[in-house]
Image 1 (spheres, rainbow, N blue to C red):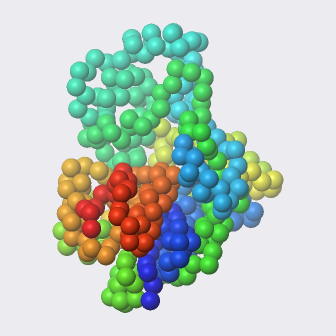
Image 2: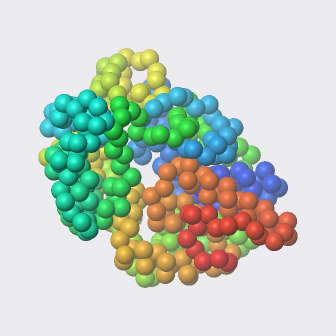
Image 3: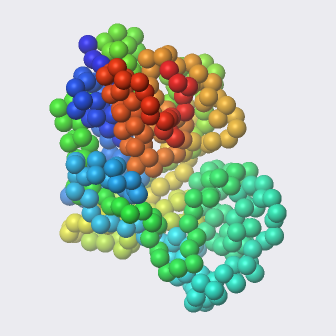
Length: 381
């Protein structure tokens, strides 16, 4: 018997398993894919650590989370500074004073603010993504950085999307071109997979195992199930399927020491079919005569495909809540798929640590006093 069967070997399941194992619980982690680490999985391709499901840059302001992950890996001082290619024109990104100088020749924050004020489109109550961006930065920046990229990424016109999708995009009136402003930022030296190997050391892990293929067995060998997969699939789509956006990756090995000189270039025009080109050796630098690049293509999603970006419209939110209300009391959920949310790695880790703390209190017989974590969307058991 196990105290916990944990479905999914991504960050949520792996962190929870580590914390509970260290607290004396007996855990079994099962993973549908043939590898651990979820979408953070990195593979060694000729000495280059390739992010097989898109680049993952670890960043956080949470010192507790940072200290936790540093037990399992040494992190580089990598800073994410992608560039934008708009119809052959290279621009600094995220939008900062360098970008605005490239576009308009401004040199100071004051000049930039005056120009932005002149560019903004007066829209008192923006009703969608397009209107919100126009009200913030105007037509030229919208067309250069947002329209084409967003249309490709989401498969629909920006007029049809909520502004919440873009509000996390930083726009700075300084020369700072670092995508993240967090205190701690980096990438595990040697790739993410070896971090997960250390995280799961001494814990029973089974890959290529579909929980839903033998659900009654796993429920019979454990007091509690920690489920990190999508809830609609758990309930066999009884109420319908939630909607996601997919991705398709085209990977190439190129016989050249360097292909593009930077980790990522975003292609923001609508005509280029991919959204970005990633060159993996710039994440964890290595000397080699070859390099590995990946072009990312947004894709429509259907049931059975890998899930990347949840479409958090009102219909999807309502369906997610209905499925959450159906969960048995001995089921705990967490992570990106189970909560139908797009979260950064540090947020998922923090929520897994929080759930583990609650379980430790429950197992010790103490009264639970921890407030719900923001990632906890299900009703209280």
